[in-house]
Length: 235
Image (cartoon, rainbow, N blue to C red; front, side, top):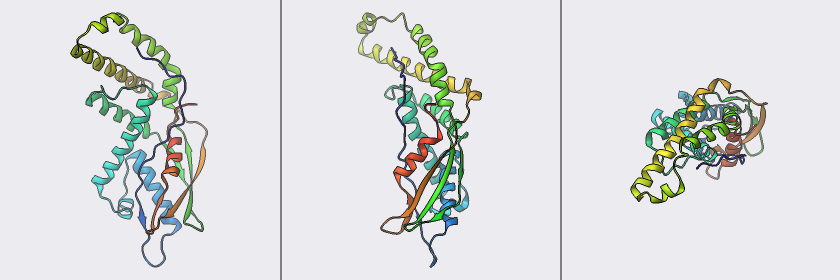
């Protein structure tokens, strides 16, 4: 049966960020850099895409929506690892439900993009984030009891019974077991959504710099460090 995890490693996500090309003789401005980071954050976490942002990174509405879904799918990998979802058995319905829960979590993202400053190699942008702690609340306050109740539901299944099952029956058992486990946890997020709050604000500086071809973006490492602050997996 499921074993409860007691701690989380630092979670980061290496999302592919879009690039911004310098245009015109004057190149990019601090306003451009600030607007890019704001647009990137709004796209990734809130699913909001301004016309100006889409034009600046040369994408349309459909591509922006695909990028937003990718951000949800990446976060799912971390949520699934933290709460021991076995993705080999999850149904499409439960998977989509998990993405909906993550989208709800992301709507609580709280961040402020400060005006960019010019540097020798590009721009530096300070982003102040207040981590949203509902993931940590669910894990720390409710998972022990949930695990006990869940295991009790399956307490009639002995090791001998499981070993005696045909391959098909055992696969069917695992499918139900894993989907029941994940669905119950996702319901915890909905049942206790009002208990989410914010940790102390943290500030991070991201570098907005050009590559060898003159296209500006932030590095995967900077974005991963920023992304790790949005949802608190531990308090």
